[in-house]
Image (cartoon, rainbow, N blue to C red):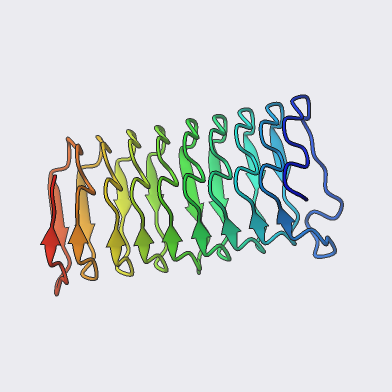
Length: 220
């Protein structure tokens, strides 16, 4: 699907792909802004052949409640689901290697993010879940190595999160103002923390794994 193919089709409420659950579909990419501001679109099953969802592909689809991501998906690009205010949950397929910057930012109703087992995810880019104010808990996959800055910025309801031992980098303001977070464990592979947990007002306990590589705890 080319860039901007259905951009601002404001009355579009249903999209059906033939053979969406079989391998016979030939669709491999949903281009940038493909369904940008299709404000009436409320549910979508993406064909099992799709490997990439482009930047802002579903930006401001404010009534999109359900979307099924295929097991073929490898990359969710920047701002793909930005401002999808009705999206309540998302399952990230094990084939996804990166979640782009601000991919799910301002998904105000998002309360559940599930990563499939044997995940290939290595990086969550800047602001990916920023301002997801009702996200309560997330279990990050053991394949993850980089949590970029502002990933969980102002996720006010986030009360529990595991940071897997595979993580080597936690970005600036990654968990800024996660006001319900009470404890956190820092993997031994993380070397620098700089403002990552600023304004976490209820944070009571911080533990560092044995044989920590930590060299610097920076400002704030």
